[in-house]
Image (tube, rainbow, N blue to C red):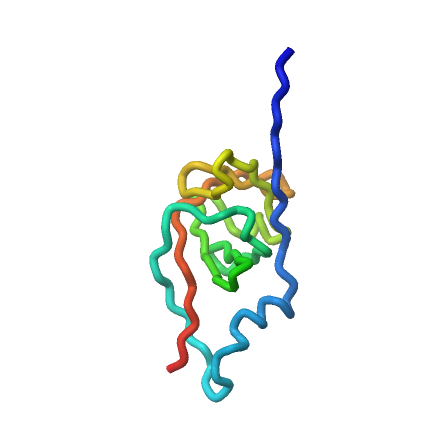
Length: 123
């Protein structure tokens, strides 16, 4: 007898009101400008609290209030993931570049090509 355990995590879209809260700590006088900074090869999948598609990237909202953008493989569209995505939980609990496959509710399957951290700065 062989018993296997497979855990699939569902990452849901972030409600609009919660997304605005991530940038609410900046001064109100100026509109925030967002810059991208390099991020590591992996993120802790359990720390993702929501996702949104923004142009050519997926934006992931983290429990520690960081915002991470994920660039998908060339043939994939972030629009396929606007309702969130599923990912099989790896033994280390991480979601990594070129390793893990995201599955949309519509059936698309894509790998992440790169991560960037989005940082809001006031001019």
